[in-house]
Length: 216
Image (cartoon, rainbow, N blue to C red; front, side):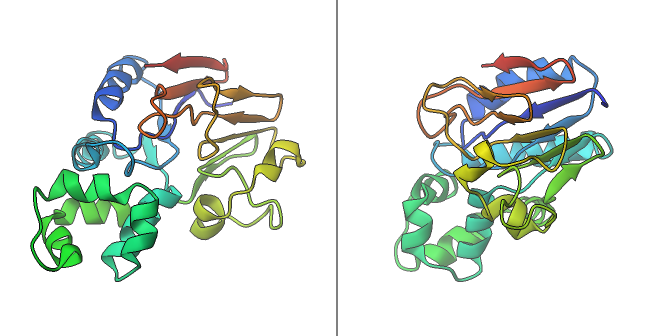
């Protein structure tokens, strides 16, 4: 297995992200981010600014995957429901870009999102898939385990992945909040959503093939 560092859901927590970046950059190995960079925490704009810059620095060996919250942000910018976006913690994301709004919230928000943030979100990948390991936001779609579309990999989540046969030797995901604030670690599935930005938990990464965890 290629040595990797896989970073879990950030959810607008810029302090945790900066601490994690300081750790993983020292490792000098490819890094995969499982998505959900926005919503919940107070600094989604800063998170996207930092990560879009890192993408330019590491164009070949850092991989940025899509999460359902990232797609929800694009949906809202494209005319989706404010209520649906707000229910996912989107008000914190809007507030990270816009100090105050009078009139059309969506228009003010859309004007405040830089083009390079929008491009970063549009270019997020559905998954990292090799012969031995599959990394995506939700793991895999239980009903369509071979589906590698962005919808399946970022929106098609079900807690059934924890008890379903794995399509690879190892699947690594985020998305499924671990209330214990510690990663889920079984033979074929690792979940590293430990509540960063959403439930006052740490940001967690797993180093592969060692299965060593970093939490900040």
